[in-house]
Image (tube, rainbow, N blue to C red):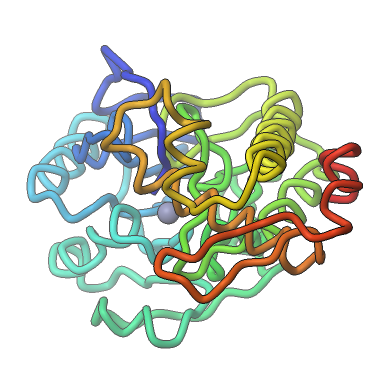
Length: 302
Ligand SMILES: [Zn+2]
């Protein structure tokens, strides 16, 4: 569930990206998914490939997927790895299992959420590896956008499948439900320590300057934080008031998602003792005595 996406034209529904990796588009384009959710076949060079993510459950995706296997001669995947439980990534899992009953589905558990998708799921944890002919994938736990989020590191290409943590278009939203901005910033800093040549994002095209993109994402968050602190310097404000001001150049239909990200910033600032919120509906936020000091050094320690 990314937000603030730009339009992407001519994004092909299927693509042979390398001799190991193919992309099949989930066919669910929208303001929040860009051209739609990417699903990736990894290890297509021989043997059984693995599928990363499943799209939103659009019936035409299954047809496209089968056609792609037929046209390229790629074997049916035996395993499916999910990045996280958001419906635009997991929504296609039931249809795929119906089509391929042998398909084994793996994800990092999120009790209370996973049950909505009644297929057997095998648990994956940080550091677990999934190997096949020509590929080794390592799970990297990357909470912040969603608490169950896993990225997958493909050793042979020094590439990372990032789901919704890093996107090829737009920036990631931090949802109120299961998102956490502090975790997200920690996740970005962890990704900075990986040896990366490429990112395969959950939405949009591959990113071939991965560390530049990760740095950009960190800077973007610190910029938003500085803007929010600046807004509060002029007085007590609600989330909608802050959104109306700092997202004024964005279309109104994206303001709801932007509001969730602003709220996540405020919660983080509150934890740091720089901001306090009241019990109002909507709650009103103000800088604490220490908040002004934080504003002068916006982003410090964030
Ligand atoms: Zn998501």
